Image (tube, rainbow, N blue to C red):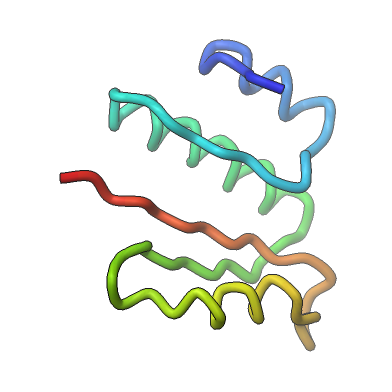
Length: 86
């Protein structure tokens, strides 16, 4: 489902999806959308955040293992993967 930035807050108010893909040409809008999602995730008690930056040095098997693993301290986790441009 595609959600435009102005409608994101209302969408998040209905509950969280299992994954989100943020894309666009406006870095500020992307960061604001990511902040809204992070805030909603935190309000649901998710404290564990794993961040990866895709590039030649990213170990994709580590990312997949993180996604599959159950945390000892939390039922859910937020995994962010950044795809830098340039």
